[in-house]
Length: 231
Image (cartoon, rainbow, N blue to C red):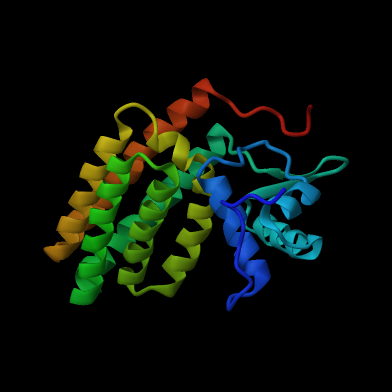
């Protein structure tokens, strides 16, 4: 039976890309959880497309690290271990600090207006309590940060990291008290950028990632992922 939340319109963007986006979003907002098996037939029914489109989308998401395929089990939503998460957040802090500083120094006034709008939307999404809106708003903020840095290679590397960290984002943002702190941290980043204070923007970005890492690593320490090859 087709699922209205996952259904897509057959229009401009290629069907495969639309299917990728739907599955990627479903993983980011926790609908498909780490370790969950993804059955092609069920995905076809939920999204309302043929098996070829689903298979191609799963192949791309596997290349991004969001999905892992196992013999005799097929595609499974990837899990992240404590050590992997620690490494991801360390590299992300370095790259986003650089992106924030570059944005402060090179961003246009239009970039900054877009960034401010993204912060406002993130606050509104937090107040709404709608998980999917929250993830979209947070991703929009990071898109602005990457665009404002004016560095295509930073965008490519951060996009790859964000795809993996999306496996944890909904979990970390919903930990008690984290969302309130996250809003304050993002406001500090935006304010530093708008003031064109590069070092302050870099420090604010690093602080934000360090705090997110602290929550994520504490969660993974207490809730280590199950072996996806079992069961």
